[in-house]
Length: 249
Ligand code: SF4
Ligand code: SF4
Ligand code: FES
Image (cartoon, rainbow, N blue to C red):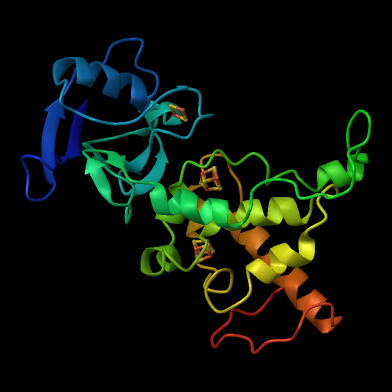
């Protein structure tokens, strides 16, 4: 297999450059990460993150032939020709394929990704009906890999102001959780022209999510929820931002 991998050592290089590799495949090379781990035995200076090797931890997100994905669940048989690996686009590069995810996690934390419920906890647990639990499907499975936000043009241009698809999917996950009592505060936290409404419904996020999630759908649902609350007068009205995408259903 031939690979072309973006290299950058901040102590030696003024900018990233591409380095070519060639490695013979062996029967155990099922996933791209398998090949990369053997490549690292050849060149120990090559840096990338990985942990679970099962598509669960989200640490080996990278650009694979121009599309964000996880190396550990990218089958070698789906890759043809020279495989081009780059760090997640738009995230600051620390070294080679390792990126700085500080802003990504700051945006994630800004939506308060935990249950808010001031009521005294019941003796055992806060119960949900099957229907209430069902509402969390498609939102709770996010592994915070960053593939979506890194492929989102709105996030590229305003990473400090736009929460980004990953954070907004998690905002939605708590807004629809029947056990959470802070829905109004959560919606209030997303008001304004940037935090939620900067999404332009380009759909790159849903296109690249390795878990098959659809942050764009959650964003749309959250917008509808916010508009419904405003129409009912439960929140102060505000001037909609210019160019806000229309809600389609
Ligand atoms: S749908 Fe919205 S959040 Fe998703 S990639 Fe497009 S602009 Fe970004
Ligand atoms: S929504 Fe998907 S792509 Fe985005 S961080 Fe979560 S798992 Fe990764
Ligand atoms: S190594 Fe954990 S998701 Fe790939």
